Image (cartoon, rainbow, N blue to C red):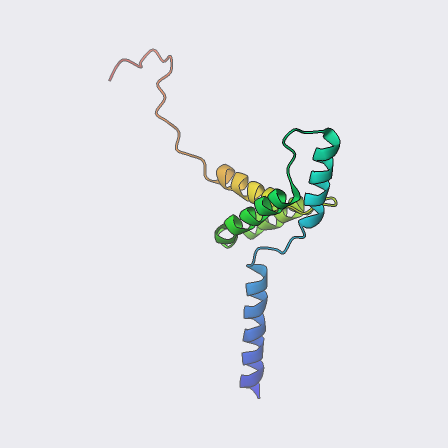
Length: 123
């Protein structure tokens, strides 16, 4: 009996881990409808169509998949909160936030600057 309960507990914990490690399911249709309507109202000559918006969101979702598990949970939570703020949900916003967080957390090595030092030519 204990073995069965332990097995069920392990199965449940694995299931919860798998759910939390998946890219969240966002409803981007409302965002794309609003974007298309706004572009038309503004009279943009190259307004984004609904299908182009959906394609961009789908592309962003695909790009998120390999990044999601490699991203710290705190960054994922913060970026997801930003991506679903207000009435719209956007994979493009989520992807951009995670990419920007990665740039901030992984600074490049400082170049060997010599500047205007008096000793710069003494090597």
